[in-house]
Length: 164
Image (cartoon, rainbow, N blue to C red; front, side, top):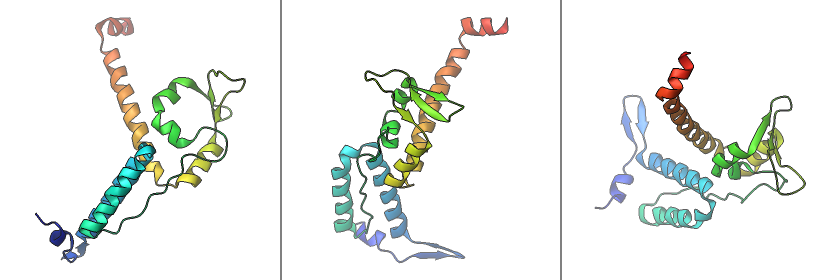
């Protein structure tokens, strides 16, 4: 089937709402390619080819995603944390007084730290568009941990200890 005709339909007007199908599709694909690129930076070329194909075949003008590999300042980058959230949670402590994450142990003489300055620099480097993806990643990780915790609490042996 030829979807070009469907995509190029003039914006539809319903009472007080205008629906531009081409704009919705372009926005959805831009958002999807951006999120996928932030999760797997090594696949950027594949997504760029898909973006070019969408432009050539369907006439969609999409935004190019140019994400740097990591921030220039020393410290752990927000993309690295997001991709390895399970490793980050198991290897860092949180210091409530100083509002800083501190590495539990390291092979080198120094421990890595993550503070608000590191996160701000990462946001400046990658843009605020990464926040939606980061929040979704963190939410999925916490959801998985709460399911495991809930199952643990429903165990008969644990439940009997809690009722005592």
